[in-house]
Structures are given as C-alpha cells and as structure tokens.
Length: 189
Image 1: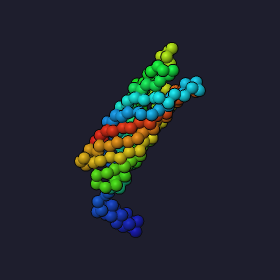
Image 2: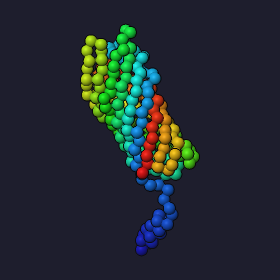
Image 3: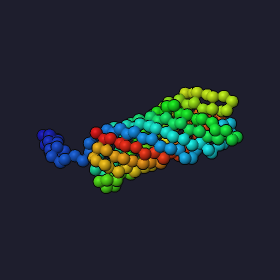
Image 4: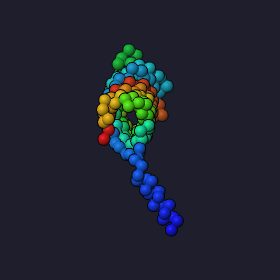
C-alpha cells in the first residue's frame, strides 16, 4: 500500500509540473566556402585546396530551455580545386553522409551557440592526379567537427554560421584536411 501511495504521489508530481524537456526535430540547409585546405598524395602535400560545398542536416532532439542535444544525419558535397606544379586540379566529393551529433546552448532568446561532430559512413570521391582521374567509394573515411552560432529569427527558424573542419583519408597514401566557413538556415518543428 505504501508503494502505491508513493507511486501515486510521484505520478501526480510528474504530471502537475510542466515539463521543460520535449523532443523536437530540425532540418537545416547550408552552403559554404573552403578558404584553406591541404591534400596529400604519396607524401607530397599541397596546401592550396579551395572551393565550395553544400549540405543538408537533420536531427531528432532532446531540448530543454537551456540546452539542446540532437542526433541525426549530415549529407554534403564539395567542389574543390588544388594547384599542382602550376596546374589546377579538381577534387570533388560527390556525396558524403553519416551520423551527426549537435549540442546547442540557448544563451539568450535570440543567440544559440553550438558544436557538432560526425563521421561519414559513405563518401563518393572524384579526383584528378593530372595524368589520371579516379572515382572511388570510401566507407568510414571522413570525420568533421564544427563550432558555430545561430540567431533565432522566429522560434522555428534559426539562421546560423559555423567554422567546420573536415578530415578525410582516401586510402593509405591519400588524405585531405580542410576548414570550411558555412552559413545556413535551420527549421525546427
């Protein structure tokens, strides 16, 4: 009987107090520019990797009034170029996607700084050696982290900017690291 009374009081307590935690989802579109990146082929490193990127991300979130934690996906593509012996060569990420985690803090009613990170399950790459073009699929070869901040236009719309670092290993002799500046819009529902 005592357990039933305690359970009843606990149930009343849980239902009587408004919950600050609720699950929501978000989806965001973004685009950006890579002003600095390095690509390495067979122990030769080129620090002229530059170009444009685009992406989509979405999360299922656990949200409180102070912090939001989300787990979801990130899909992106990149059209990059680098210089090799005075010639411009292409490096394209046709698609790269995988899980993404985001932690966003509500600093005020308007400003929301965040960090996010993830790893690519699949990447489709196309790159130019100069004498040969390759197109390859890679699994679990890429990771990223980003730090950014958003401004709430409305409760449902957030405009954000971020600095993202991407690291990719093509195989044992190929790798690329780059910093990208992104901007986009996130829609919460």
